[in-house]
Image 1 (tube, one colour):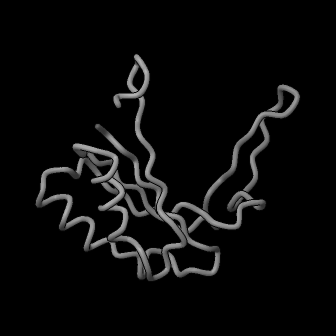
Image 2 (spheres, rainbow, N blue to C red; image 1 turned 90 degrees about the vertical axis):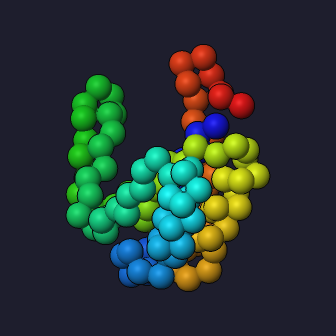
Length: 112
């Protein structure tokens, strides 16, 4: 089953620091469960796009209403949800506010 791990940090956290990237990368790569991983740039250089009344609106910088933002993403192929949660636990502590473990859906729905 494939899972996307979204690592959330607070706005005050330094970009890319103290998240435990090395631990999860080494563990998931060694076990063959890592498909891909990405550390995201600071949200201050992002754009937020939405459509209101048919018009496209673009705001520079992070989504202002968010207290936390995604700092990294890991795509894993694990035997179970429990294993994905175990790997997410490698990100605990440091600057990570939390890690969302989210199963991916195929064209026919959840792979579970």
